[in-house]
Amino acid sequence: MRKVTKRIACVVGVMTVLCAVLMLLCDHLVSSNAEGKAFYEIDSIRHNKAGLLLGTNPKARVTKITNYFFIYRVDAAERLYKAGKIEKILISGDEDSLDGVNETECMRDSLVARGVPADDIILDGKGYRTINSVVNANKVYGLRSFTIISQEFHNERALYLAEHLGLDVEHLQAYNAEMPKTRRAFLTTIREYFARVKMFWDLLTY
Image (cartoon, rainbow, N blue to C red; front, side):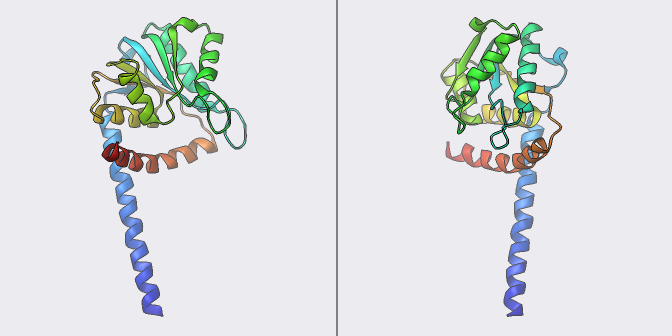
């Protein structure tokens, strides 16, 4: 019985190490790919016709408290637009999330309330996942060169997807929105390691 237990423990240990190595490798590939393409300083962003604002819910799904990922992404899009770095904003998100909330309309309304003209905002309600958002930006809305807007971890993954899906894109860049300093933000960072592994599976099967 002890030998069986030791063998099981050994197998579990090896599998755990392999999973950890895989996650770290995927994380490194995605982060290194984004070097020189994702910026916090607005002066580092070159002019693009459009910005791709990645959607999220204005409220946390479980607790219903304010989602600062939402607020900071809208902040970033507003800054880019008013600085003349982008002329149009394509908001891509879920038009019918699990909460019954239209993410794209919520973001549009927030931007309009801040003085961004509604005519300069385009809604892609079929951006259910990041992979859908980048594919739609190119194949549905005809964008070849655009500025991705989200938090850094999300921008890095979106850049990798856009550049490795065989899309007709070039000169992509990203503007990093502020990262919330909350418990949910910490959990999101942990979840991102798993999301990056899944992303490579998506690339293989898309």
